[in-house]
Image (cartoon, rainbow, N blue to C red):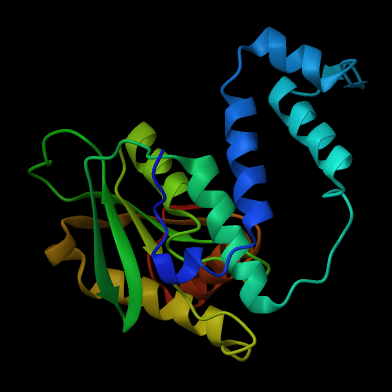
Length: 226
């Protein structure tokens, strides 16, 4: 099991976080019946049963006191988020993942496994979550790999500016610039401008919604928003 974090970031992570993250990944690899047994009595609400792996993680959080909100520094919160993502995410398969620059911003371009299409195709522009304070290309590398590989659609993840260094509305400005850049360079990317989508999780979903509104105002084609 290898870390995907650079040593400079790994050294800033609390050792307890490393151990807890490794344990969480071990638990998630257990057979489903064992996860259910360790997680306790199944939680049922409105006829729906909580997934065994999620219930197990929630119970582990309660036992270790992780269910209580803390007050980490911005630097510590970023490092721990990246560490947890690196361990829980694993090494998801992908055709290729290449770092590049988009509108002056760090970005990562994911291509699914398989032959490259001869005609321009779709592209998903992805914005990571993290409460506008945390998150980057590393923390969301695994989800982007899964999105690209399972959908068969290339994903372009954008490392937009976050606070407190990036003062509002920096993140939204960066996202709009990224969409314009993709449209301007669609031919070079092998992208059909009519098949560009935007998506994100948490704060990134908020940004994706904003970008969709901005695209409508500017008359930029946008096929999908999530």
